[in-house]
Image 1 (cartoon, helix red, strand yellow):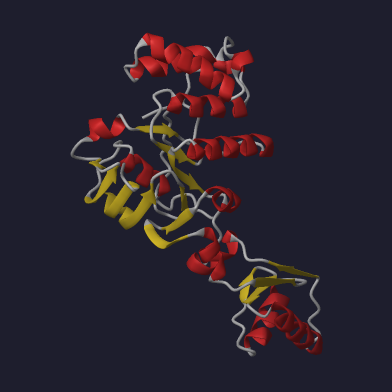
Image 2 (cartoon, rainbow, N blue to C red; image 1 turned 120 degrees about the horizontal axis):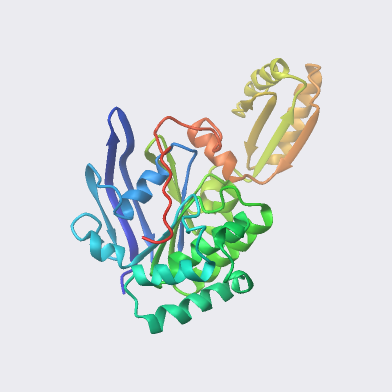
Length: 327
């Protein structure tokens, strides 16, 4: 047994003038969920494509269960599964036929993949729809089938590339439950997402990637602790008022951040900062339209680290979708 399921060192990939991966480093302990967090175009999908042997890196190394993804790509493929951003199942086949096809592609014996397919259909709540063509499935059903297809060969390492994109809240919650079950069973999961709540709920450790570089790598709790224990947000009447408020509050050395018409303060002494800030704003006749006091979120962390929100696109180039049911 290896302690690290995935090891990445100095991974670099360039597409013409675009540096998609810039000396990326991270390690994923076996039997955990690791999150790659970043906006569209940050380099997340490029990293997944290298780790699943779909792309060759220009420099650096990557190993899955100690196996080099370049030197022994065939061996790596036998140990991994993948569910991409878009469900890669064949809509003209039934759910059961899709899973049996994956079993054949994985070169499993018939006596193994047939009951395996039925068990997965039951596990993912698709047994009653198993004989229906996939074109009749809802988006959430297709995504669950795609995940099931990635599990037919029982891979010890599973890659999810933005698995909940386009899903409703109920379907997202169902898929989160599936991921937790997989890790409980010993599977290692690498999850890419731009949904901060998703990374916070699922991942034991997160690497924040922006413009092809890893800019932070820590537990969600440790990342949020960088901001202090309390976040105070003032909603101002307009952007001009927010600029004035930020300039005023900065005089106390509180380092406010402005986002449009909102001004954000972070502190380990939230109550004192709130009282002082409200006094200063009132004295300057700058009255907030709303005040929110809360614990820091990963969105706050991402804004602190990158200067922009996670949902904003960057210019690296993960625009080409990866659609695979299993690697």
